[in-house]
Length: 88
Image: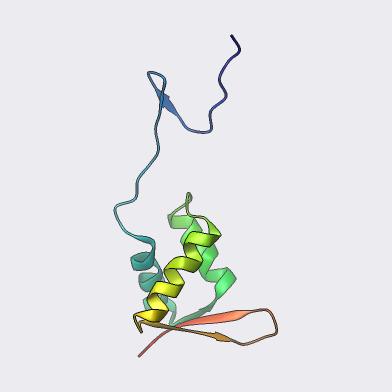
């Protein structure tokens, strides 16, 4: 049999994943509390530094939940760019 290539570190043959204790929407709120407002791409990069396994679809889902709860506001500030700001 060939060698199994695995993206995750293994412990006795079982893949290990790192689970984050802080949910992504909480990290987004913390980042916005420091910066007040950020472009969407910059916010995603800052979030990606804290939570490497987070995908862009999960990021958008967290943004949508926060916007529906009334905690953030997402506005277009250029043709294809969005500005995310903390609602005061």
